[in-house]
Length: 486
Ligand code: SF4
Image (cartoon, rainbow, N blue to C red; front, side, top):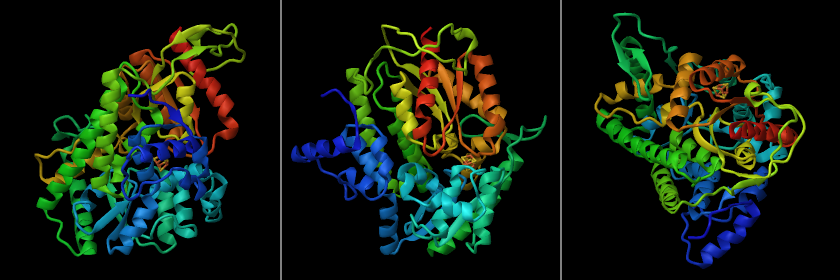
């Protein structure tokens, strides 16, 4: 087995040609990765990607989602746009034969991938949703003038305990004439003393009455999906859909366990982020998601067994501020450099929140870090759904396990437990520009991590395009690594 490497998109095309000459067989959506950059996703050229055939399949799967959605529509499939809940309604939709569901919210990443080749944010600006909102406002541009997906025949959106950003943007969408089936998830509260309570996937607890309420809301969604698809969506189908979703979640659980605990680093942070994202709506193809994850997991198992790492050993000069007192600086960086002629292993970093610019996951590794745990706002889409409950009750519990429908304190407790589980040595909280929940939530999480784990925490803000900010972000990540090494 050759040593795995991270390579550029252009290097990938030459590598793919070699792999094809050696007999690589690709799925229908396969092909050279360079074509995606040529078609508009030009900022892919700034990324460094894993060089395995499994990663090639993962990237091609991700980057062909819009094409595959249009093909599904042309083939007569009914297209459902599910918004905001990140991981519950798609499980129901994919229990139907004739339905393909996707998150329009995924437009979040288009400005990052396309850079100046897109006007999505400018369109949102013109509609009154400016950069005081989080990058999910790109979705509005995709509905209003720059199509990146077929317009769904049915749109659902969770409301209630959701962020102000999404509420406002979805209301704007409704005001523009897009009918939306709203369903409510209440703010998850602690059960009162003596009140009936139930455990949720992932470890939170909720009052039984809240689960019953959400179950009723999902009953409305069930009826709407069945009517739209022209097929019954009974408990038998829902159970089968949950079982398939759990296959995806267990594959991801094993992938996370192996990657985050292996002595060497078998898979990079960027591919791990993409793989986790498949959980929320299966990148519009549930069966293929399972195949993609199985191939990725097989590659990771091989690498872990052989002790090979995707990351080069970091050695040589690390930037450290003069007079720097590491015990005092957690989260703060001074200026200056000194040379540290030493060899370091990558520092184990737990990452909180998805990055609006994917390039920053590379930057973590270039700075000497290694991803060992993550909470990207959808941990409830990774926890297996209970299979021993009535299916809508199981899905209601899953919806209430969303880290964003509870308190920041609950989310901080989850991060602490998960970072402890993966023996993280530092935590990065990457704030999302404009995101209403990011104003104070980071402080709550940082305080819990410092108090309970004694780890250094770095809070950074990552906009969709970080090119101009990269030197500063790099310095701060390098300093975090240096703090851990001391
Ligand atoms: S990133 Fe945060 S602010 Fe933006 S839509 Fe998601 S939860 Fe809301």
